[in-house]
Length: 319
Image 1 (tube, rainbow, N blue to C red):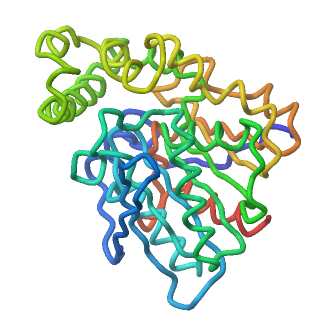
Image 2: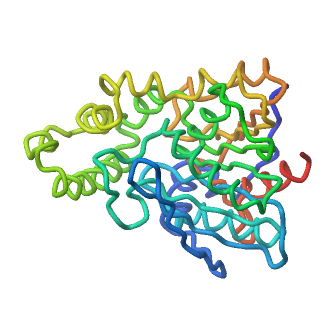
């Protein structure tokens, strides 16, 4: 499908990718949303928490919201999305990945960019409710990569899955990592590393023989974390093997579900290989929009409703 031209043109300050990213993550507040938590018990003995919010009137439409690295269902980009969906008559199920709902998960493993088995478990659980006939996926950053990978892996998708939106998706994880390790992103990388190590120390209390203080001391970069924990905990040889097998870029050509990908050109987290122009041009089911501005999961717009929140609603309405 042809590349979709973008009309997003924010106020001057928000033309800065860093300002847009920081505002979205640290400053934006969303009020007026009520979420109800449900614990989903997984087949391997672990759990994930789902935070539901509902439209004012009963509906058969639902959007499953997937957060980014070290996010949760209370981040403004999730709650803002849920609120706009609810206001427009669509229910929302915001997923907290394993260990992301404020409580350490039970197993040594946790979540990662390619853990589509967990997304599949959420979808199967929702289908058993027999309430929704039109289900959409909306993933941000890591959640965007997971969404695209799920759609393109070749599984038989439920007929209820009608469309998907991926925002700021690092479709090539190694390319994204290279960007994150550059000096321009040191503030973000250090923040991610700090939170990941905090969680790893909590995990160490539960599994003292599987992770040592020496292991943790070796973690100087995000790649080190993936070499020492992510890859070993989830069955990959090392960080590079994890990035190669979990990147969604290789799966985009096989996507048959109507899908919209929005990656800002000034997103400092995304490398050159994170812009799937060619893949979108060759796949009639995939639309790719590359605004000049927006930063990483930013896209500020008026009335505290982001451009991507409006754009996602429009995309859903047109399906």
